[in-house]
Length: 115
Length: 114
Image (tube, rainbow over all chains, first blue to last red; front, side):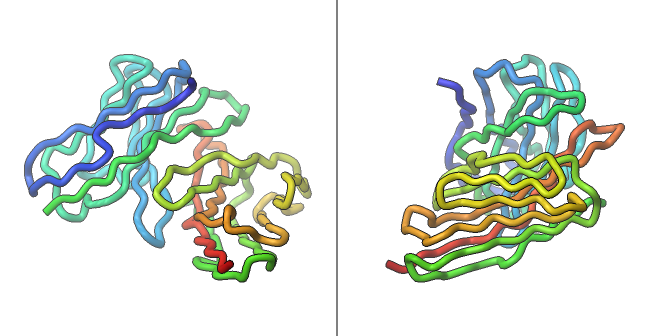
């Protein structure tokens, strides 16, 4: 079954304690993204990756890091989480395109609370 | 930067009534996608519109893309309780640096009273 998986699904942590949210897709997609969803703000892109070892900042990258060592995995790293990073996080993947357009597949989400 | 405005933010309708959500972009879009997110779930792709003035239908859902490719709408006829959720539009803009960038609207939350 084609899918994007994320772990953990729920996480409560304290300010400053480093954490990693994993993301994996089994569709051989080149393009992967991380979004955060906050009420009234929709989905905002944090980081994206066009392929292995190619990552770039999205619209709200501050406080986050990513890596793309393998095509299927795209972990999100919070080196020193703060309460304003409390949010619902989605990983997404899609085929890469030059000018073609493809749907994005989203993972189930990770609800993060930073106290 | 590119923005996609979506209205209304909330809509509470009686079952059987119609529902419409609108998206407007500050820039011309390559295409527009629509997603549905059920309560507690993740966004799921519904459809993509590419051509100016395009209209597509999926059962009770009608999607339109404006002539100028800057606005779009989703209309649901005779809503049902299964339509409950948040509907997002996402406009695709081509940039030389980032390739195709997808910009999401804030979403419209639909609640249906039975």
